Amino acid sequence: MSAAAALFFCAVFSSALLHMDAPAGAAEAPAQSARVARTLRIARGTPISIRATVGDITVTGWDRPDVEIDIVRSAPSSDAASTISATIDADDTGLHITAVQPDQQKDARLRGSITVHAPVDQPIGSLELFEGTVALLHLHGGVRATVDHGSIKAIALGGAVRLETGIGDVQLENAQLADQGMIRLRAFNGNVTLSFAATPAHARILALSLDGAIRSDIPLNLKTAFGPRFGEATIGGGGPVVSIDVVSGNIRINRGAI
Image: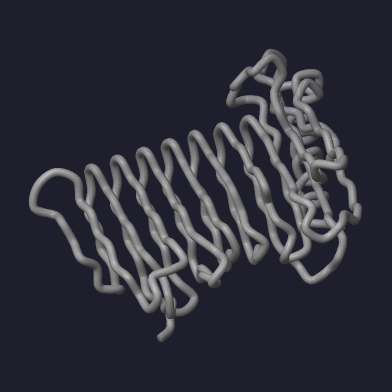
């Protein structure tokens, strides 16, 4: 039994117990719809797009050629849960996965969480989440992810990496900066932490915080006296680019192994 299936079984069993023990007139426990799961294979290099309204999204790279997808929806009633989309569609433009509320609703009680395992070099062309958390692990084909309200935690990403939050922290650990890659991390209201797997041999680093501190193990030319804090450094040949922008929050850069 998969982890998602085990969670679903436990939730249903707990709900049944609550209904047996609850006195008349007690509030009904949240119901959870059945898990939607699919395993398929797509061409190498085909982008994956993921979109959800409220929930948690986890994408993990593995060494298998298949893409495994789990969507779990939960709400105060099974009817309400069924209004959340649970689509898995593949076409010429890529693989599209959604858990979206109807009519552009943003109801925190209607949750659609998505778990994806994909080949480690499969690109995540677009990941969009209104509210919740995003976890990204061992993806080397590039990632673009945006969260309006919530955090992004990523480990061992490579390629072109773009991570952005409106309100929430961005944390990227063991980042792999290849010659053809790039890293762009942005937060409107939140802290950004970047840790390299190894100190880059070549990089152009730019860090800007309008209202916060910048700290770095890699020596930066810093402007901190007045106005926005700005730091920059050129390592080796000066590319690829690492860009970090924060409106309200702190920036931390860790060099990684030398």
